[in-house]
Image (tube, rainbow, N blue to C red):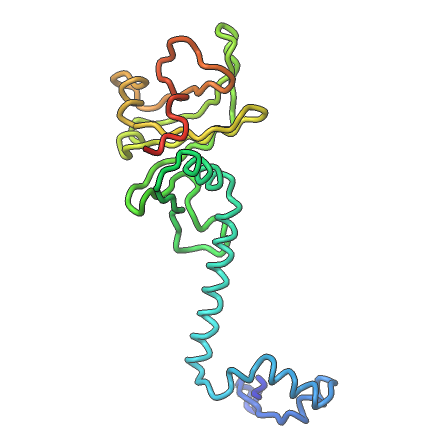
Length: 214
């Protein structure tokens, strides 16, 4: 086993110690040192430095992938989208969009978009704000959306997650939203999705697009 130390000229070097000497220095028995070797280092004996480094990199990568998978599995938006797809009984594939960098697994995938069927990126709005409209007696979930966003994707997804109202996943065609909600010259606006009842003559019927994975 190698132990990092300093040579007589002050440079850091490798000092080769016997197992008996290692046991004496750390205050444990020789059989204990032998057991540590067998449990933690036996598979590395005979490997080159490059092989050991690659092995450590592979282990770190596998650990990162497992942490990322657990984070995605616990994500409430992804869970809601998958349940909505099951409810619609459609054979589609919803995948997170993975970011290459970062150690925090929660930050290693996009939270405002998903990939559909391995090809199309669709924006996702997680709606948690609400507004009560006294004139119609209806409560709405509210989010902001831009013209550029609608023009960039054929579909837009809204996860309505406002307590204590029923949660919904709504998927609408972006061209229909543009036509119904964006007059010429308007680049961004708030949209309102009813939470408790369908309003009379809505400008756009969002509730008709619930679980719309066709």
